[in-house]
Figure (tube, rainbow, N blue to C red):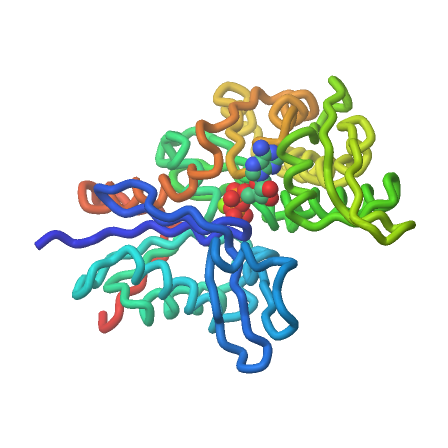
Length: 338
Ligand SMILES: Nc1ncnc2c1ncn2[C@@H]1O[C@H](COP(=O)(O)OP(=O)(O)O)[C@@H](O)[C@H]1O
Ligand SMILES: [Mg+2]
């Protein structure tokens, strides 16, 4: 009998699941719908996301992982259970590798390990986001050479310099794609007198927003006119939106520079040669890679399919766990009864 290996990217915006031999089988938003009267979860993932902004009074859709911390153990456990059960057949006790933000505390680590075990895992491993991202974009993390990875997620940006299988310098910044959206919502309210929802803000971000003011792009959006109180359609331009993004984008760039400044000189020299890799959905923001390259002087590579790098990394790490005795010191393992 073969053992089932499951890699999980418990992201602040998206949850992805990789199953050995099958590839990525789940890619759903990190949203949970809760009935506030009974405190019961009524939907998880895509189904819950479809409820955002459209829920009756007693149902609330929340993003439980948005800050990159495990705020609610119970909900995290339910999420893990939901997806682990969805992909593992009856009777199987899978090995599970969960990717967590690098800023996670020991208590939070314990919570994730226990949650995955309660969800039916035979063995559970934890890996931090930058390590999984680095493996997923094909970097040799065990090499005695510095590699730099910047993962721009929904709620956090994880920055790390990796050498010999470990993070040498790192930072987990609580700024990501969702902060760009919030800034867009505020800006559209001020400039166009229009109230828009988060989904429209995300549409604007992925369609016309850019880290550079030119070239100008336009799109039509719908919202509620704050003067008349009625639904309205407005044409907005990337040039008008640009100032909204300046703050979140620049705090990301500043954090990357901060990590480079405290990186030991030998490793900094390696990074100049190897370049840095950008992963995570936020790396897809138009012009982001170019801006980081310009502001740091380090060559930047945008990872192939940045949204799935981390989960592919967890899958690869489970694969190599059998074939080699080398284990990254950053992988925490836990199995019941050992
Ligand atoms: N083309 C795009 N341009 C800008 N942002 C994007 C694009 N595609 C996805 N994103 C953003 O990337 C974020 C999700 O990235 P992801 O790596 O899944 O985050 P996490 O790991 O925190 O779950 C969201 O904020 C989403 O809006
Ligand atoms: Mg992520």
